[in-house]
Length: 90
Image 1 (cartoon, rainbow, N blue to C red):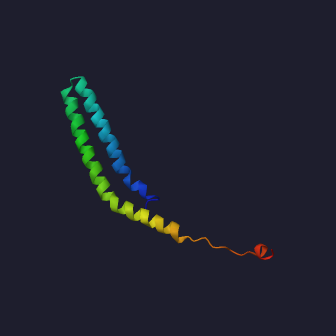
Image 2 (tube, rainbow, N blue to C red):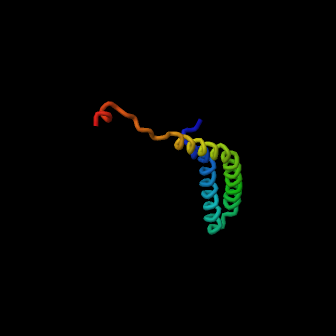
Image 3 (cartoon, rainbow, N blue to C red):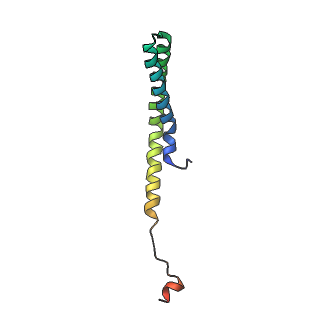
C-alpha cells in the first residue's frame, strides 16, 4: 500500500506536466513555422492529456478511500489521561 493517498495521483500529475510541455513545444513551433513539430506537439498534448484523464479516473476511488481511512485513523486516536504515580501524589 502507498504511504500516502496523494501518491496515487502522481502519474496523472506527471501526465499533465508532459501535456503542458508538448503544448508549449507546439506553440513555440507555430511561431517558427515548423509544421512537423507542431504536429508532434499536438499529438503529444492529446496523448498525455488523455493519459492524465485515464490515470486520474482510475486512481480517484482508491485516493478517496485512502483519505477516508486516514481521517478515521486520526479520529479514532482519542486522547486519554494516563494516571502515573507522580500525578497521583499531588
